[in-house]
Length: 310
Image (cartoon, rainbow, N blue to C red):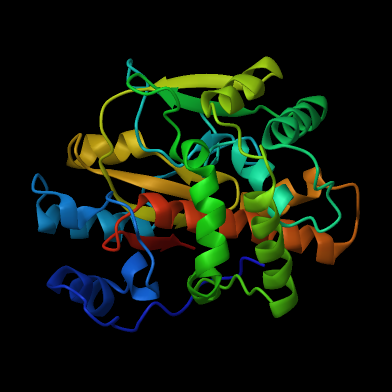
C-alpha cells in the first residue's frame, strides 16, 4: 500500500510565499493545499525560525539524513516532537497518539467491531492484545495539562473531522499513494458518526484513557515545553524512524518535526485483527492513516508541510 511516492507538485489557492517555495522549489505540499489544517501548530505562526535553515531541514529530512533504525514494527510513541525533562524519548516508531493510533484505527476500520463498546474498553483490549503478542506500547501526557496528548485529548474532534472532511483527507492520502475506495470511505464515516452519537463512547475525563493504557501495560512519558513542530515527516522507510534529537542538534531547539512512520500501519493492522484477509488488513491500515491525517489537521496549521521520506 505504501509504494514509492513520486509527485508532490501543484500550487494550492491562497498560498503564501512560503507555500510557493514549498511547492515549486522544494516539492512539498502543505495541509492547506487540501483545505486541511484547523489547528495552530505550523511555521506560519512562528517568528523564531530562519527560512533558509528551515528549507535546509526539509531537504535533509526528505533525503533520509535523519532516519535511524528501530526494532518495533508497530507504532510505539506519539508523533509529538517534545521530549521528557531529560531531553529523551522512548525509542520506537511514531504515529498519532502512540499506541492509541491502533485503538482508533482498529475502531474506524473494522465494520464488524462491537459498536456498544466504549473508547475505554477498546483501549484496554487493544493494549492487552499487543502486550500478549510481546509488543511494547506507550502513551504520553505532559507537565502542564490533565491530558497532554492531542490525539487523545481531541479524539472526539478527530472523529468529527473525519465525518466532516473525509473527502479532503482522502485527497491528501491519495497524493501519497494511500488510495481509499468509496466503500472504505463509507465504513469509516459510518463508524465515526456512530461513535459521535453513542452516549459515553468518548470518556469525559480524557486522562482516564491514558491511565487505562498504563494500567494494562503501556509505558508513559511526561513531555515538557511547547510545540515547535514545523512539518510532518511521512516516513515510508521500513525499519526506521526520524531522529528528532539529531534535527535539534543540527538546527537548534526550536526546529522540530511531527513524525508519522506510515510503514508500520500495515503490520499494525495484521496484529489487530484475527484474519488473514488482505482486504480487512488494508482497511485497518488505511483507517490508521486517516486517523493520523485527521489528527494532524485538527492540531496543525494549514502552513504545516508534509515531508515524504521514501
